[in-house]
Picture 1: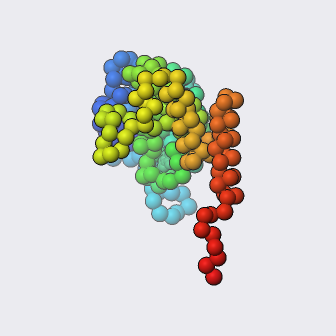
Picture 2 (picture 1 turned 90 degrees about the horizontal axis):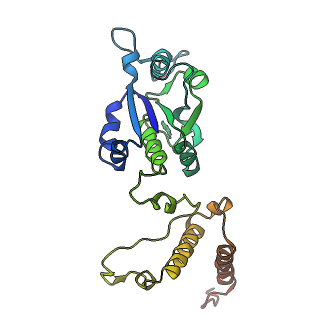
Length: 258
Ligand code: ADE
């Protein structure tokens, strides 16, 4: 997978890309991240990449020409791959989008800065717009790093453990089960006995149930899309039933306090 990132702040990317699992992934040739500083395509002597907005108002707007020049110079015209603009106005990023994009061989990412960027980039250069959440960052760089990270993880070989990405939270459409490692007891808090039992069948069932329980408690909206086996469906129904019973049972000391 090749990422071409167009940004005014290429230095922001380097520390993260050179210290994480992603560095190993590039050393193994599984991903390539090419950083392109949009400023290099500015043509005036001050290398201007922003200007005042037409119509007035505060703030500066990123200029259209250096962005087009950078993308077309590096990728050609038309670009042979999706050109994704990072913007809070884009479609909301999630695991499904990350997995879909992870099958591609090349992706271009454009990071906006300042108060905005010339609308013609959105209209005539970007083929997709992605937001990482309903909040506004000072630029698209952190969003681009998040995309690079999440899109790289499902690529075979990027994670040391080949099952790692599959067991991830969200990869199965549910939240992940709880994890423990040594020691078996810390300050009186014990690791659940079942995990020490060595019974792999029981452990797998417990993990799946924990995953269902957590999702039910914290993110019930995820069930709308998750595919459950019949056993899992029954487990979920038993959780729902126990909740109904709890709500129906009168509290133990429910005498009137009037
Ligand atoms: N740029 C600024 N805010 C952003 C967001 N929430 N997602 C993607 N890009 C952004």
